[in-house]
Amino acid sequence: MGHAVALGSGLVGRFVIERLLEADHTVTVIDLHVPEAFHSHPQVTVLEGDALAHIASLEANQIVINMLPGRIGDAVRPELLRGGHQIVDLAFTAEDPHRHQDLATTHDSVLLWDVGIAPGISNMLVKQAYDEFGALDTVSIKVGGNPAEKDNSWSYMAPFSPSDVIEEY
Image 1 (cartoon, rainbow, N blue to C red):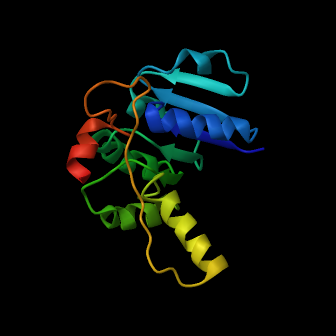
Image 2 (cartoon, rainbow, N blue to C red; image 1 turned 90 degrees about the horizontal axis):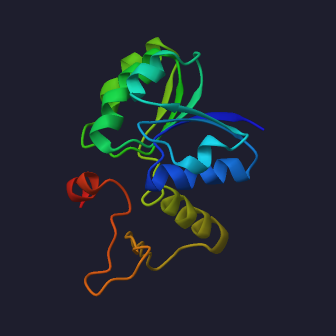
C-alpha cells in the first residue's frame, strides 16, 4: 500500500496511525515520545525528538498527516509547505490557513486543513447520509471524550489537546 508521515502520536494520532497500519500502509511516526507499541511494529519507522528537525530531513513530496497540538501544528505548516509535502492537517488552528496559499503554490504543496475526526470525518459522514437518503431534518454531532477509567466526577476526557479543547470550544 502507501506510505504516510504521521506528526504526533497522542490520542488522535495513535488512533489514525493504527487505522493506517490496519489498512497495510507503512508509517513514519514523528513525535517527542512515540508509544512503545509502534517501536517494534514492522510497518513503522519511529523518529523521536523535535518535529521541525525531522521535517527538515524528509524527502520532498511526502503525504504528511499533521496531528500535533494546535500551536505546534501551526508552527510546522510553513516548513512542511516549503518541503513540497501533501498535508492532511488535523491540528486545530485559530489562525486562517489561507495565509499559506502563496507558500503552498510556490512549492507545489497541498494543505487540506481542518480535516479532523469531529468535526471533519463526522461532517463527511453527514454528507454521505444526505447523498444516500436525501434531505435531513436535523443533524446532531456530539464531540467529547469518555475516560478510559470511569470516575465519580464529570467523567470527561479531552478528546484532543486540552489547550485546543479550551480554545475551540
